Image 1 (cartoon, rainbow, N blue to C red):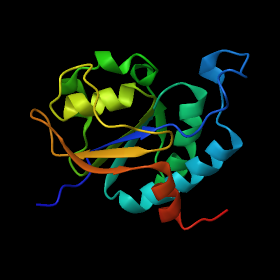
Image 2 (image 1 turned 60 degrees about the vertical axis):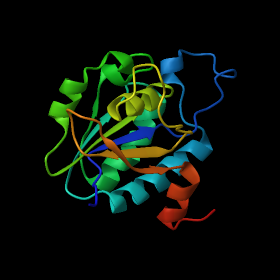
Image 3 (image 1 turned 90 degrees about the vertical axis):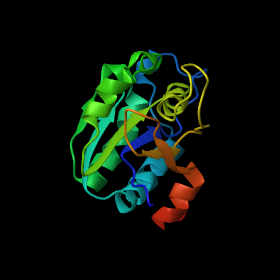
Image 4 (image 1 turned 180 degrees about the vertical axis):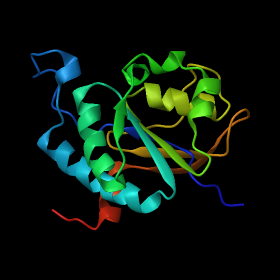
Length: 170
């Protein structure tokens, strides 16, 4: 049986160095390399996802900057959700998340670590706080199946693989 992605977790691309940033962390932007990576990731994901797609993002600037080229590539609007801000995902009710999953497509969420790994672990049947998959900056985790019951890992793609899939070089 082939599983299709129903929930796609996207960790924001590389941001500027937090130690060098003097402003509010919510406003810390992607680095130049992160902007390039986000654009490449968007092209790859648009190719991998089929059907109706809903796109949600953390309100933090680096997540919004990662989501913007993805919204363009998928031709969908992006909506900010406070529950995707760092430290907020642990409180999300899985039943509420299950109700958001499109029947004929994917829900794509752009957020932060360690929140997304923990959420993936919970969705795959792990206990809260136990962790899940490792998601480096700019990586994507796709889960299939549905809730209630554990979801299954469809694919986990690191940033470099997504960039290679985009066909862009340099």
